[in-house]
Image (cartoon, rainbow, N blue to C red; front, top):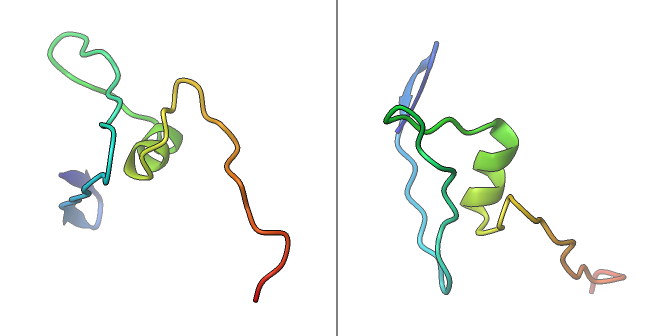
Length: 59
């Protein structure tokens, strides 16, 4: 769940393989930066992000 000034959002994501990489909990809470959240939702290990292959042209 994500809460901001506009309301609450619920995110659900299923990985085809692997697992989500969560930061360590401190004092019972986990804090994610926007960058860490974006990486996590894409299944990227935010601790060591790697450039992915992109096609050189479309079509």
